[in-house]
View (cartoon, rainbow, N blue to C red):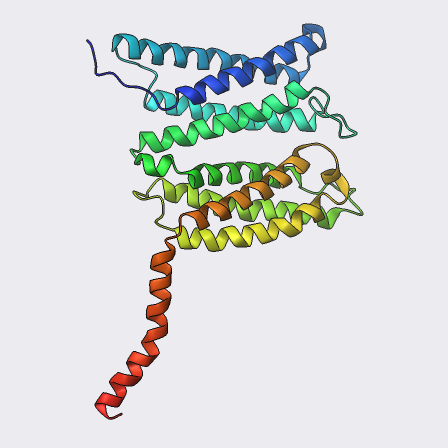
Length: 294
């Protein structure tokens, strides 16, 4: 049976995921032969291998569907399920690689740049793939799931979940406990706000529905990160290359991007008209009262 031609908007996501996971897998296999692999290495290699195979199948079936018009069994609910598993598996891999000092040494030095950066790239791409897939699955309009702010909120949610989990204070954090508590609280609060907005975007039909609220919260987040980026990275684990350092600075950059995107979409003409009307209201009320003889 020949079906109408369907081009997947997520072909580029699967392509990037295939590239990043392949580089990560090659680096892991090269550095860790079979005899030297422990639980962390075995898990990471398994997830990377699964991702390479799955991404390759998705790309092949998508292009085959475009060329022949035959049904693609990997679209819809199946693709959404796969992307869900990937975001869970890669989030665990990121945590294991950091805590077991596979990608970063105990001194805070990057052990292997390809393993560290491309594990992060695979994780972020799986997050984008999942939410792009979910918006398309629930038939949100392109102006919503293609919105820059939607993707910024997704990345803010992801980076702050990493910040929150990476700044849980250990028992022996005498001098920098307060800094870690600040990072953990900041990550938890911002991630909570981001999760709410990501959920709202799944119900929107217009990307600017909550623009004013987004602007107010984005400014508050920027202020919190403006203070936190120097406080968290001033002493303790935040001074070393790792999840805490990168997630903190990434959070600051994303919050700046969010503020500018909100400002860019404000209709300043309507805002000025609204403010002018608000200023004219007291005068109108006074004239009405005078007319009534009050």
